[in-house]
Length: 75
Image (cartoon, rainbow, N blue to C red; front, side):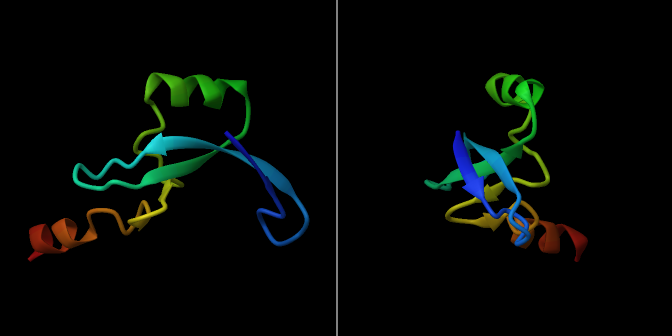
């Protein structure tokens, strides 16, 4: 878990939890915000592994992870 300062550019703070990237071949860790103890438990149980706010340090934001696959499926 990491403490983040100024997460929204307005001086607010928050916490992120470290997860594995959901992309199978990605070596990078990913981070997703946690807002309470319930979110920490969800992270521990794996319920946040595909969270929409997840950001991989290698792949980028969750919306970009697997985007090539999504484009290929749409064609």
